Amino acid sequence: MKEITHDLLSSFRAPAFPGSFFLSFEGIEGAGKSTQIANLKKYLETEKNYRVLVFREPGGTAFGEKLRQAILDTKTEITPLAEAHLFASSRSQLISEVLLKELAVPNTIIICDRYLDSSLVYQGHARGLGVAEVLDIHNIFPLNLVPHLTFYLRIGVETSEARQKIRNAPKDYFEAKGIEFYKKLIIGYDLIHELFPHRIIKIDAEKNIDHINQEILQTIENLLSARVDQIDE
Ligand code: T5A
Image (cartoon, rainbow, N blue to C red):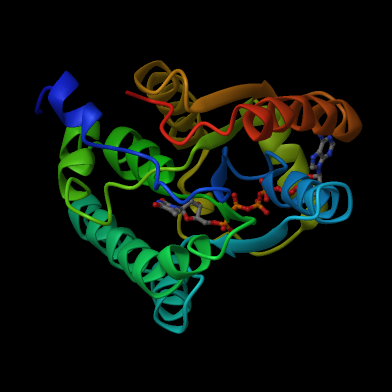
């Protein structure tokens, strides 16, 4: 496996659009990403007067939604390399077709439900392709654009299972991979938190919904007042 060098990490930057911000949420299944994104969107729109757009990955464009279905509904095993390229294709289309155009509109906040870090953790770490290999795939514009801030909602495997049970939906391609896979995901997320310690904010998402929401809002307040364009350098 390749080495993760400082040069490689430093080629990933947040997009520089004055007054606009790009955020993402990460975590294993059931971490509470959709729940917290909905709360944050409401707050930013009503209390801060931002124009807030939410996208999910894979997806966010017509092409991306087709890829989402193709990947998550597949019953046959895809290689980790193929997975990584499929997610990167969806991401590349989302950035070019939507994100860059929308971020150019002042006072916009884009929130992505999963982004690059999902590929680093799922394909790079848990599926064994290698984190450096996945970073390499993304080491080209515009795939090398990363959010200003990423909220990693950290829960344990048991909590993930319990929350999935409540939802009671059929398991998709990754959900069906079982408990050992989920353990690897948690290690993977902790690893990429170490790689991008300023961009990725780790939050204990075992706590209740309001507590987590308050922690997120506090961090967002700091970002909005600092108006930092490039955090991880
Ligand atoms: N993938 C994706 C890759 O492998 N590589 C990539 O590059 C990308 C982009 C996408 C799959 O694709 C993989 C990763 C995934 O396997 P998905 O369906 O988009 O899958 O994402 P999921 O993570 O599966 O979405 P979930 O809906 O399961 O998780 P959320 O959004 O984190 O959780 P949420 O908010 O829906 O909450 C789940 C339940 O828990 C409750 C909620 O009310 C809900 O019932 N809940 C809480 N309960 C108690 N306390 C809290 N704090 C709670 N927060 C939420």
